[in-house]
Image 1 (cartoon, rainbow, N blue to C red):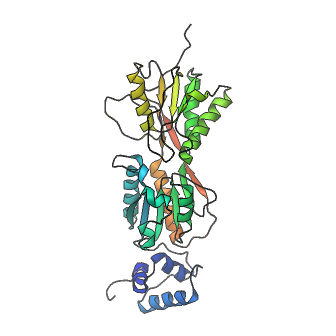
Image 2: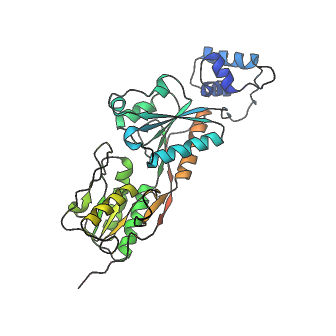
Image 3: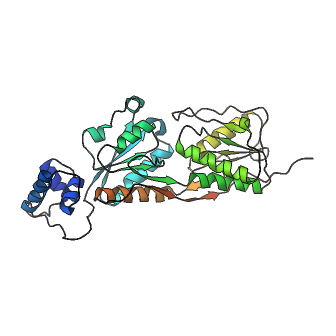
Length: 337
């Protein structure tokens, strides 16, 4: 190692372990045998590594971070594909590496750990998008730092970073109500993911607080239980506005309404969620809720790196806010005589 200052990763490679384990050993943190700790300390000394005595555990250099995304959420132009790109860039800016693996349905159903974990390729893992509960709880027990991104589970041993989904649809629904809408529907399968459930609850809260009826025939599903999108089944009688759980669903709904001969927003108002830049320039500009995706990514990376450095604290959910963006897909409504 002459002429080159050894890093924690160099020590880890020499011993066939991870940089996270090296960091914990040198910081005196639990989580390994005494023999392994002594071996790491001995190797660090032999290689001339100097760990600042008494300082807070430093984040190891050049960590390899796995990013696992369920197959049903990933396509080249999807919301999660864009989040993945931003994750990799943020990790690279900090001197770390992001490694992608797509979780196929058979592995998820069979509770098979991803190759990133079985091959011990990564120091930490970000699970982006919500797989089945049994699967993500198994991931949380895999023995490395894990952060759930864009979903949460208070019973799993993992940190979670999520957007303020309930607040977002509450704001959008309240906005429609202030503009005169009283008959409002929701589009989204609330049982498909926790995020959609929270968005449905935000819609429900706004309706109940304004003493408005939530009609079951105006609660439309937009996807199967495991996330595959399907066209909503439109009822014969329609509300004056729909709150959709995401922008992709909102654009799908607008297309269906137009096929029925209805104009958006002149005949019916529609809002989305995410402010995801997809669609053609001829599409109706969509009123939506802009998620602070960069803030979510920053917080997820920070949380995971701190865990990799040996940070000890209770697991919890961190919520990142956003703001409504009003465009041209909704307008005030006045009851006709």
